[in-house]
Length: 140
Image 1 (spheres, rainbow, N blue to C red):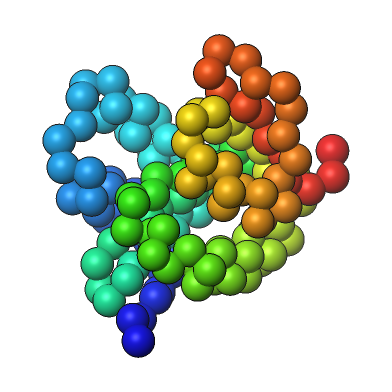
Image 2: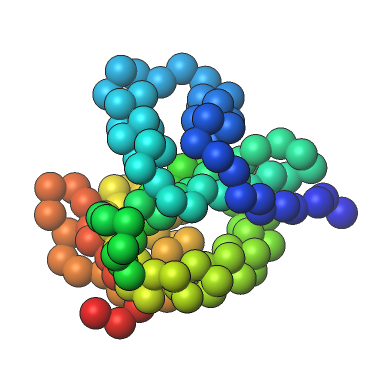
């Protein structure tokens, strides 16, 4: 049986792991990664048998905010262990929702992996625009 872990990480570690998971990123992808990773208050990395396969974080708009923006990076390897990751993700999100009762964001409409993950975490979705679908987890 494979070992699944989700650990809290720092920005440098998370950036390095995402680069290792993905390989080569375009300049736009690197800027997006740095834009999400820099102001993130809570970063998490998921592992299968010691190999990083996903990462996510929460970005609050201000230090005193009770809301946060969620971002996710997941590799195809997570599909094989999706139920284990969902179970672990739900536990982590329950703790994070104590800090941020409302979590929101946008997801690429073609990223079915992330949409399924968000649905399992209790996300509700708004109408898509420009290839993205906004979501909210928690009461507004």
